[in-house]
Image 1 (cartoon, rainbow, N blue to C red):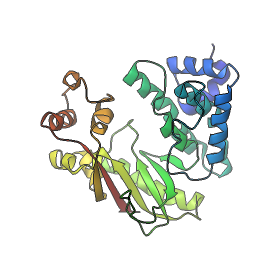
Image 2: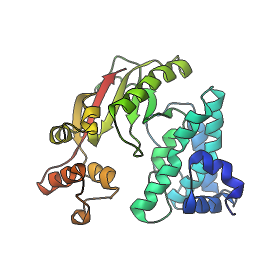
Image 3: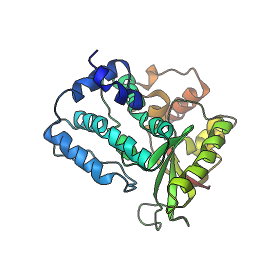
Image 4: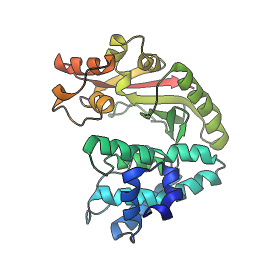
Length: 284
């Protein structure tokens, strides 16, 4: 089969089916100048603990950016895997982390009905080697903001923090979340002892107090209550996207209202409300 030469890579990244065939087509040719430029940017960031993803204009626009970055991420992933292993991190943790590539490809196909990766910028964080999936959650080791400043960020006593991200592939039972935090508490001091993080942060629509109020007995509410809420900012489309994988606020009347979460998300918008991004923290 066409993708056979890349089978080991696709297993690492959990790329399957039509996505594997499309990715193989990208890898079977020689990388373009734009791809080489993107690879150089990824190499420069590896091991540097960036807080932000690479922006869309990082590579000169001689080719469509999405295609360039899909190919660059595929070609760079083995280097990141080697970097993990050089640190002594297990192959299983590395694979669980990098499998987000395949998950994001599948999500893109659900959202847009085609091969692609409109979340490629998010995956550049994985490729920097400071974001790891440990059980149910992803943890992103970054420097703590130093002061409140114009951005509204909260300054923490810890010099380093763990940013928490929630992959879509599973529930949020308290037991799963507890196990994930327990693993993080031992993982980061072991592999990054010179970067002690005593605080975890989360920025998510799941931390919107409205959701906790409307679904107080849900696993999402239980997760949100772990955090001290620092502030909220308007994020009108986040709840819709992450609940339905639907971009924008058009065509909401065609979305299902089968679960209590789906109904809450849409009813708030029906009533003229705006979903917010909750910014919170907890002590590790």
